[in-house]
Length: 240
Image (cartoon, rainbow, N blue to C red; front, side, top):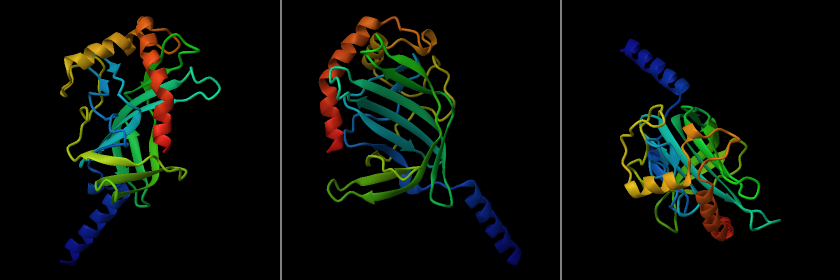
């Protein structure tokens, strides 16, 4: 009996040292726009393309076995020249753990993607690989008193709060939880309309490198025409 208890204590200590996951995190979370979501609706690995959401936002998904995925779409206003907004899209996934001190460590697989657009300085966006470890100093899951749904509050490594995220579904919207090879067939589903739209706007990564201009320059300009009309309003929306 004493031996069994000792083994249990040792096992608990090892588990604590390796990190634990929190059942409260499981599911897909999104900022209040609820338009930016993880999954193949944001990044399509079958043709290596990113799909522009209707509104900027952030989304995270967490699984019960320690996997996570992130989707970010942010419009960056330019007060000096409102006609020249920028935008950035980022996607990555990997494994996560909760440390004994309450920190949340997210380790990516290294197959992420980033699209950076600056139309006034470049004719088209720059599409590159993205790989960035993330550490949240702390987090909490509460029930939002106004919306009456679960809310995830995150604080960056330096204590800066992240915009609140709201539970979209306990069934995660995620791509496969393994390293993804661009161009390989995905097990997730997506509409042919969305894939076609992505092809019209963005050139696949395999045909583009940092500093090079993509082939679809005219389509990029049309995309930015629409974004320029909504960027300022979108930024103000998230500041309220």
